[in-house]
Image (cartoon, rainbow, N blue to C red):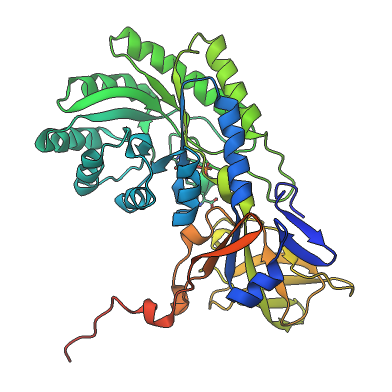
Length: 421
Ligand code: LLP
C-alpha cells in the first residue's frame, strides 16, 4: 500500500477507504469511479495550518489539482483560501461560498474579461507574470474603477529536480518575470495607475519532495524583496507557490507542518519573520486522499501480458503524460500467485496505460484501485474517444456521498449542433 495513503487499509481481503469497501462502492456506483476521503484532505490541510499557526499567513488551495465542488467546499469550510488560474475556477470558488478576499489569481494568460470579473468580486491579489499583463491589468482596473492588488511572480531560476513538464522555476520556463528584470518591473508596477503592489511570488514546480529547492527559492526572493524595498516599494506578503510532493511509491516528502516550519525559520533567520507568508499547495492536500476504481474487462496474455481495464488516459492522464508511476492494488486480494501485467485502458493509443509491469493476481471482472489519484486525476479528465467522464464519491464520517454523477452519452454532445444540411 502507498505509505502516504493513511485512509486506505485492508479489512481481510477487502481494500477499504475510511472503513468503506471500495468493491461495494464500485458495485453501487459503477466504474470508472473516483473515491475521496474527506478526512484525509482535512488532515493534510491541518498539517499546513499547524505549521503556520501564530504567524501571519494565507493558505490558498491550488484548486487545479481537484476542483470538484465538494472538494472546494471541504477546504472553504476549513477556512482555506484558493489559488485560481481561470474565471472558471473563480466561479467554482464563489459557487461553494468561498471568500474572494482569500483568492490569489495566478497564470500567464489572464484575459481582460477574467481580470474584470476578479476585480469585481474583490480577489486578494493578482500574481502577475509579465509586463504586458501588468499594463493590461492597470488599464482594466482604471476602466472599471477598481484597484488591483498585485504581486509579481518572479522566476527564481532554481532547479526543483522534478519532471520537466512540471518544473516551472527555471529561466527556460514560460512562467514568471526573470529575476534580473524584476526590480525594473516592480518600479513600473508602482508607477502605473490602478495598481497597488502588495507582494512577491514564485512557484518552482510540482511534486518536489525536498525542502532545499524551496529554501533556495526563498533566499533568491528575499534578495529581491530587499532590493525592491530599498528602492522605496513596500512589500507585504511573500508567496512561495505550491509544490510539496506526495508519496506515489518510495518518495518521502516532509510533513507539511515541518516543511512550513523550515520556511518560517529561514524567514526569521534572514530578518523577514514579520512578513505574511502565502502558500498555494495543491497535490499535497488531495493527492493521497483519492483513488480511481476500475474494472478489469479482459486479460490478454502473450509475450507481454495486458490487463485491459475500463478506465483510460481520458480518466487519468498522468501515466500517459508524464510517465507517472501510480500504485495499483486489487480491491479484493486473491490467493493466486501474481503475474506481471501492463494495466491499459480502452483508448486507441499505445500511450494509454495506467501502470506497466505490475505484479497482480487478477481475473476479468475484478476491480483495481489506482492509488494517489486525488490530484490531477478528475481535474485533467477529458472525453477523448467519446468516453463519458467518471463519477466521484466522497467518504465522510464512514458514509459515501455521490459528489458528481457519471456523465451520460447524451451529455457528450449536448452542446453540439448539426449543420442545416
Ligand atoms: N501554484 C501554481 C502557480 C501552480 O502552477 C501550481 C501547479 C500550484 C500552485 C500547485 O502545485 P502542487 O502543490 O500541486 O504541486 N498536472 C501535473 C502537475 C501540474 C502542476 C501545475 N502547477 C501532475 O499531474 O503532476
